[in-house]
Image (cartoon, rainbow, N blue to C red; front, side, top):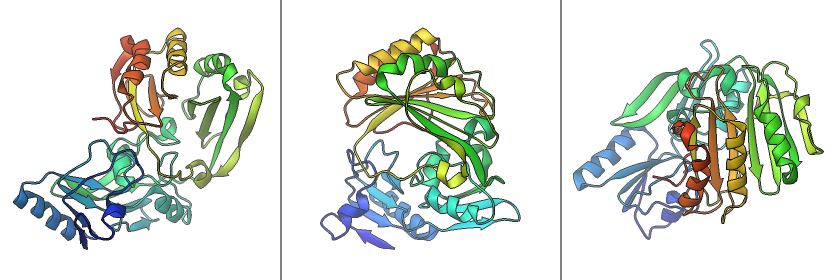
Length: 331
């Protein structure tokens, strides 16, 4: 284990994560490698009256600590048991490690669309995977949680006998957003398909994945800028790493989503004073959340709570809660 104090070589690198808009300002960093190291870090925090935080990748950073930072990036062992179809991942492991090791045995985890996200933080938030409507949340597959104090040091979870998926994406010019949103909203969606609809500046993107065949012909309601759809290895549907950057995001769970309300939310986001990427995730299927949709917003800067709330106001009457995933740089 290494211990870093402000001014030490390596301190800045150790406290930094994927989120560049926020950064921990700890009095001391424990770069842990074992559960015993975590115990020592917690004991130090308690003896000195310090708050503490745990960071693996920093993707979901909300409130930076000024006390003790427990950095788990070195505590990243991943073991696959093909006989029981399970994986054990330590606190600093990322999904790419699990995806690669599981694929060697014809297995796959319920990981999301970013392979460099930490396994533990993602799963503790629920874990909305690229196959969520077909198989449920990643947290539903957890068998064992190993903890030191209240810090999770490892998870054991089930893997799926999945090697390939039917998956793809479509891109449309933003001027066709109304037609694309309407087609997506009206999709008679099979329970085994997990889609997402996202605005990305001057384009609209639709993604979809399942282990079973399905049709997306009804979504071609406008000229397609780019389309890619077919059978591919699970690893290709599990997402690619992005470079670290500044961002803030939040979400709401909805009990209902009338088309008019969806259009109002889209239009409000589009004319906002800040850039807002809007994402819509249909729920149902194996998720069993009681909500019908998850509406998420993300912006490439901080301090945009007010602008995001203006968008959420368009669906406020249907809001029934929030997901622990998709909350970034918000308390």
